[in-house]
Amino acid sequence: MKKNPLLQVSDLSVTFQTNGDTIRAVTGFSCQLDYGICTAIIGESGCGKSVIAHAILRLLPETALVTGSVQFKGKDLYSLSLEELNAIRGRQIGIIFQSPDRALNPTYRIYRQIDVPLRNHQVVPEKKRKDHILTTLRNVGFSHPNEAARLFPCHCSGGMNQRAVTAVVLSLLPDLIIADEPTKGLDSLRVSDVKSSLLKVKDEGRTLLLVTHDICLAQDLSEELLVMYAGEIVESGKTQDILQSPMHPYTRGLLKSLPENGFIRIPGSAPSYANMPSGCRFQDRCAYASERCNNNLELLNKNGRMVRCHLFC
Picture (spheres, rainbow, N blue to C red):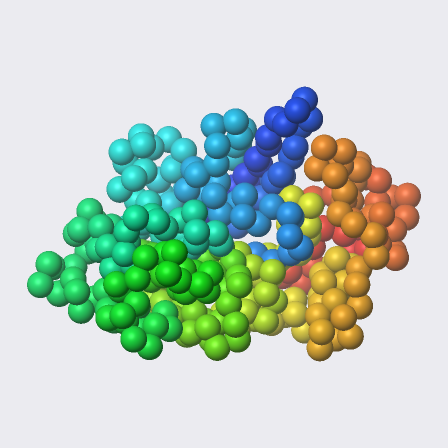
């Protein structure tokens, strides 16, 4: 019998009110994360990927209006008390933030950044804690973990701090890891270190939600892929199927923009969240646009893949 999903997000929408404008950052987002699987969300900057990551753990500001459902192990995260939620944050669901300078305490050495959450959640016995911390630091790419453990964030480069944040999250051994641009600002060698550590997480049977603009990283890590544009999913399915034969015009354009495919830029720019067009949000940039694209369209099942496009009606 198939297990129930670890995480089930249903019809998630996030709206902000800013200077009198209504900003619909995410509209009708749904996904299912099964145990031991990596699902990646890709798309241009500003498409709503990070908003989803923060919404799952209720980390958005109070001004955000969130509707829909987020179920983790059958529990509705938005119905839990803050105390109940804090028991899940970090220990059961960890998030690797893309801004390590804000995620790390500037007054703590790297060792203490990892040690404090471990003590709070009692993940490993005290006698094994030091070895656990140093092993985790080595796993994320610190070749001299004893030296790295003594550093303050101000002594570290942006890449080093990103690896430190990754170490804090991985040390807690969460069931689900949300990695929000985990390789941002890293050179190719350090990207390889972080990728290796995330692959190890998968080998241990844990679940990953990867939020990234790095399509190559998504290809190497994920089994399932969600393509976002202007706050909506436009295509979803098996990673290799989408990358080998993209259906939605935006997905095709995104892949053509890669250096290995000629660096062909998608013309135009994404619409304003305060003034979304009716119907398809990609129509002003799409070579296949027609009058019917002014009509709203739900995701359609096309040979086991979901795509939001009138070309497949």
